[in-house]
Image (cartoon, rainbow over all chains, first blue to last red; front, side, top):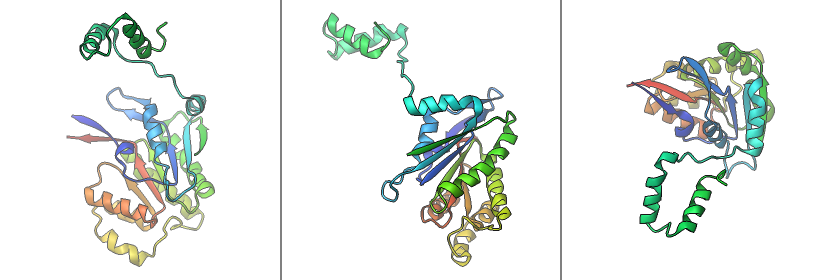
Length: 121
Length: 132
């Protein structure tokens, strides 16, 4: 069995500067190169933080030409987060919320639905 | 936090990693010539290759132990306890590497040397494949 461990998450060290050399890694399961998950990129950047020693910190991100605009946009604007609550589980979720009295009437149900799915009109 | 994005147009992955080593070395010199730096690379194997590349660039500048901030005599007792012989060699020149396959003691020594500023550059792997 192959397990994946992320050194970025387990590394107990901080630093003044972080260089991220390449944003792709080889996924042996699929036999192809895949991009780092964006959370991992943020985690790596977070390693450049020594609050007591430095006033600021630096990060150098090295990526493919084609990914540059994506990272520029991602780092300056952020990505919209969409709920991953599957709709076929919705009734279970609603029943649970009703049981703990978060939802007591139709209005509550609509508010809860709106907060869960931002694109829900 | 200042973020610099540098793009490359090399499609072949191993060539890309080699192409990135010189800019990485220059970035260290330009932005953080005295402060500690962590370099993240995609795999464990790449750790060692990147360390070698960085050290080659140091040697090319006639400063093979540029990233070492400690006397070799003071460093030697730590190196004696390191099990990974390759790691001991690179630490001697001031660059360490850190990945999941290092044993606990090696990790601790590398961590301590880096935190104390004895070595300035640490190359860490992002993802670790380990077989159970």
